[in-house]
Amino acid sequence: CSDRIVAPSLLAADWGKVTEEVSRAINSGADWLHMDVMDGHFVDNISFGPDMINAVHESNDIYLDVHLMITRPDHYLSRFIEAGADGITVHLEAHHKVGETLDRIRAAGCSAGLAINPNTPVEDIVPFLDQIDLLLCMTVHPGFGGQAFMTEVLPKIEKAVKLREERGLHFHIEVDGGIDATTTSLAGKAGANVMVAGSSTFKAPDMGAAIKAIREA
Ligand code: DX5
Ligand code: ZN
Picture (cartoon, rainbow, N blue to C red):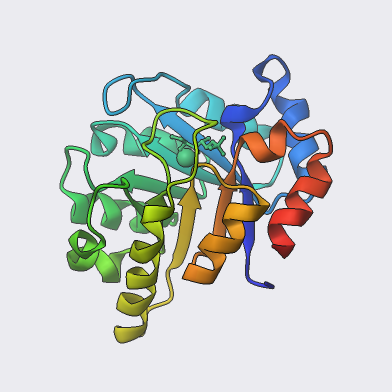
């Protein structure tokens, strides 16, 4: 699949040596680096904030795909833009004016992503279809790496593909959670083209082989 994008998730890296881990991902063939921001409120976990994004941004040129699992993305948005995010994905379920946040992301020259949790119907994104560059269909309940892929999300991906076709749009469809070569094949057949993979890449014995397997699955 030539337009497939593989995005290892930094959440699964060894944080004792973050810059080396990012270099390892780049040298292993990563297209994007996925960075999970968790506030201990929107999800039951705390990860890192804009300073981590900035540190990674300063150390290399890889595309930073920033996934904001935070309750008030509108409040923190400018800090993530200034930190060097290339794409910023916000949750539909968070507390903000979704359309305004998406417009602000684009106005700053970043790619605008909208994420939906496994239990959120894909129809809920319809009002924002013209404002997004990426739709993230979560394939686990967000908050932690290493969870099992939820196959029940696959029909939502197929519906998203239909919505996109009907309107002649071109946004990416990303999946995140439990992605490895096997689940990539399922998600790819349903229509997803951006594969976020934490455990199956950073924790693999051979990261290059793991990324290649996802790319070719
Ligand atoms: C989960 C995060 C994911 C996580 C995926 O809430 O959004 O990006 O890093 O981890 P794996 O690939 O291990 O399921
Ligand atoms: Zn994520």
